[in-house]
Amino acid sequence: MISTAINELSRELSGYIVQAGDAEYEEAIRIDNGRIQFKPRAIIFPAVIEDVRLGLKFAVAHNLPFSVKGGGHSAAGYCMNEGGIVMAMKNLNKITFDPKKETVTAQMGVIWYDVYKFMQATGTGLIPVGGGCPTVAPPGFMLGGGYSFVSRSYGMSIDNLISLKIVTPDGEMRHIGVESTSKDDVDLFWACCGGGGGNFGIVTEMEMRVRKPFSEKMLVGQIRYPLEHAEDVLGYYNEWVERIPNSMAVYGFMGNQKDLVDKTTNVKVLGLTPVFNGDYAEGIDLIQGLLKLKPINADLFNMTLPEWEFYNGYTTRVAGRSSYIRSTILPKGGMNNDVAKVIIDSMTHAPSPDSFAVWTLAGGAIEDVASDATAYVHRDCRFVPEIKSIWDLDKPGDTLRNVEWAYEFFERLSEAGNATGAYVNYIDPLQHDWARMYYGDNYERLLSIKKKVDPHNYFNFQQSVGSPFNPPKKLTDLSPLNRTQL
Image 1: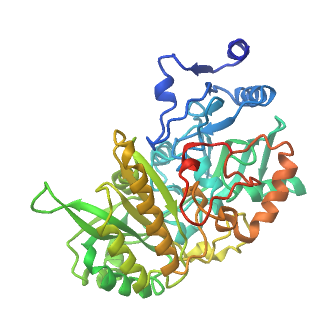
Image 2: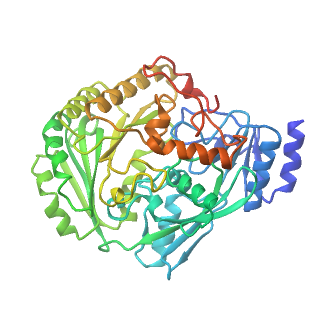
Image 3: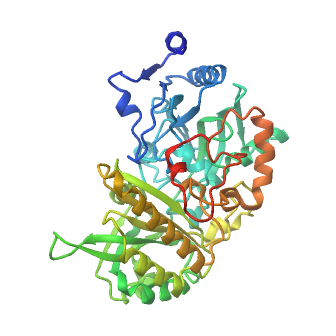
């Protein structure tokens, strides 16, 4: 009996196991996207790395689905599974700092909040090149590439990854990184730098370079315009971003905000989020053109980057509501007039007031790295839009219209902006031709490494490297949203 085997496993672990019926079970299976309602047989909370190996060995021996949960922000819920084993990493949370090397080493049960707070406590002012949402965990974020507010200055998160420890499907612990010399280790580290989470093993520790910002505090904030002004705003912005220094990043937002006078009503807005890695006054000079475009409001602050991430980062959480998430990737000039028209039309007809879209501004130091130097291929793109269609958890009947709206919105946006791909960290079970869209020309090498590292395909899910799954171009079937395995 599998229940007997689980009880025997629990006696081997330094950590503990939670199963259905236990007091902690419902909390243990909860993730950011409340639409995801998978019920694994057991959730393992490892206390030491050996627990990770034992849990993986158990899942393989009993032919059970297996997944790893960090911060619980998997867009499609692939960190969970139905009827299998989930490795919940949160108790592996040790962090150390090496001031001479200017690196921070963290076990992979941490979230970015933990890393930012830890580095703040060092008093050095050094920051990791991490995520804008503090509750996201580093491993999934970095395995997919990882865009940071300072990536235009310092590259993607993976460009600042020194080494990692990973338990591979054969149960071995491998320490790989930039100084690896064997071909197998070099290949695996390459794959872990943008090849997506859940494909090659369980990352238990990462060593990351930390950076000294160009000034102690930065210009950060939100500028909001009436949605109907999107053509004028993006007409300027689309050209302006090609002239700004790498130290300036201006992200985007499309959604609702409270009316400034009547707080009971919403107004639809197009927002820009400047983050300037430098002196506040210099940043103000750089964004003068944006401020002349007659925004509804401009809230600008002089604060450290971690403070900004704590202030602003929680606004993008789904926070237990139902959500469908997808992405696209646009080239230079991609925020054109046709895209502006699509944004106005689609956001005007959003079925839920909670839905919003954002975009990341790429370029700068990101494109200094060749597209095949890491597994992350989209080095020369300019914008990375993400749609979060969000509706009430107690209204499952709204699923179809909210998913259809987001899907068609980003199909139109991709066509208007001449899309070149999609972002694996916003993984989408409805993404047609996902292997090419996420990985481009790097997919064949990823597939070769996957077959070597995981010849029995133990690490598999619906869109894992090597999966034959491919949804149709036309949205005709929502069932892929309700599973992790084929």
